[in-house]
Length: 347
Ligand code: NAD
Ligand code: UD1
Image (cartoon, rainbow, N blue to C red):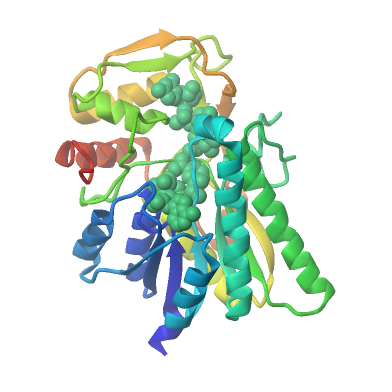
């Protein structure tokens, strides 16, 4: 009976996946992690064990490796899969397009084939607000047109279409096997309040929050603010930053929903519905760490949009989920993690 509560979390050693393991265990599920560790450290899983009292099983391997997937699905009987494994650096994806498609699209397909072969139809996929491209209207709802401007974004969009078609084919043939949710993350920041797990970028951080945190802890000199002439509150880019604990809570809400539904396809935005500018983020971090964060206005980053925030009402009405943690809590938790672990999990 316990086996029926096992949840496979691919990419579970990563930033969001490690937090998902914690809330899954706290919600009564047994997380099993599958990760190649290409962008993560197994110490994260150890720390998850410290938080929840039992180290999750870690299956080290590639989600593209079908034979390995078969072994994992034979060893465990899963009630559902949360598919987070993927490469996520936008800039890198423009230089290594084939690698991104192969890993992110090929990985999702290999996983689905293995799920079908082993009779597991419940799937939550880590999608992104990037699938909205440069949306014409804010806040952006799930019904907005989708597009992509780089291979990373396109890989997410392609997987969404593949999963949607998979459910349509299923309904067409009256099999009602697939039960799928695409969760479109806005900008996850913060860390578990214990300060034991958090975001640990391998190289120079691409994203704003980990960059600010590394400047705050003295690892980097100053934050480059990418442009101050956008038509936003202060000219800098505006995003919907969401606490990673709220984000992973959204997965549990989606999981509970799927486990009550026979089959189908849904997409939900996971955001707060509120946007903050780059300068507001820097000010919030300054307040949290009690020191100034050196920063300088630079040129715009190519491909950036001015602003993006979510219409998160569908997740509230369907799942009963909403983000509850404010910006102050996001940066306080991000700072606690960074201050306690200046070198992340260590390389
Ligand atoms: P992360 O890099 O910390 O975690 C991803 C994990 O997947 C890593 O542990 C990595 O080792 C693993 N992985 C990658 N390719 C793999 C493969 N082929 N087989 C097995 N494991 C593999 O990233 P994250 O921030 O935790 O993101 C998790 C997911 O959420 C990703 O799919 C990402 O695209 C998506 N997402 C992230 C953000 C964000 O801002 N962090 C926003 C939107 C969507
Ligand atoms: C990035 C990804 C996007 C992904 C999203 C969520 C890019 C181009 N896009 O978008 O695909 O879905 O993360 O994880 O990487 N900024 C600075 N200085 C920095 C870093 C960022 O000023 O050093 C600014 C950016 O211009 C932007 C804001 O901070 O206005 C947030 O940037 P970032 O954290 O990279 O997220 P997104 O641009 O939303």
